[in-house]
Image 1 (tube, rainbow, N blue to C red):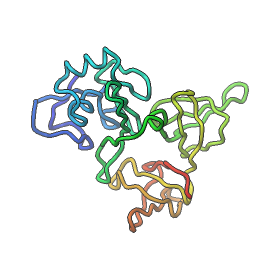
Image 2 (cartoon, rainbow, N blue to C red; image 1 turned 90 degrees about the horizontal axis):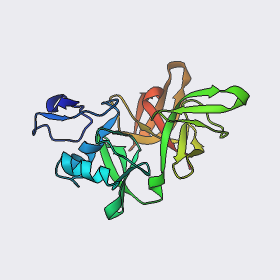
Image 3 (cartoon, helix red, strand yellow; image 1 turned 30 degrees about the horizontal axis):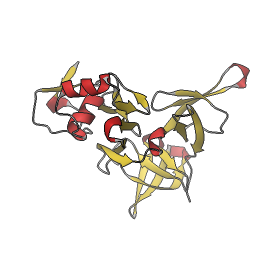
Image 4 (spheres, helix red, strand yellow; image 1 turned 60 degrees about the horizontal axis):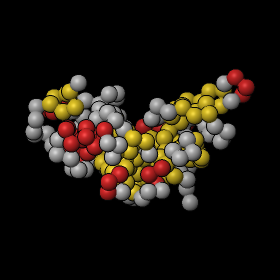
Length: 218
């Protein structure tokens, strides 16, 4: 399935001029970028779809440390990409203008990512299941609350730490007019479900549902 180029999300850092259609991701077009678009148009390590499909078939591309086989697979915020032949590692991020971008990282960082906890359930036997913003679910004994963020270790396939959504934590805005802004949580207003974020000397009032904690305060 494809979408017309002029109708693709404004969050994609892809030229508006070119072929009439671009590939549509297999889920949530507004939440990420398909593998084909990332490799061909953003990283520019492939010239066309055929080259991308060949690389995927030969297991030369890893998504969160595992081979990815479908060029329509969606790469969402903080996912990691490994280019096996060149030993290069990248993480999906947001610019301060709210557009998807990729940043170079090291091999160790490529085995981890942060995701927001969007639901918490107590299962039979008092086991706790944490449901994350990227669609993953984990059973975990680590103390976390809804709205906090979980650090996932792909090598161990588990949550290894919790980043609380609290005053003093560092956060990023992931939606809305301030999308991409990063900074320190200065205050939380539970009554209207918003928080104050200090970013580059400015303070923004943002809905909590549009924010994500990424690092403990220091």
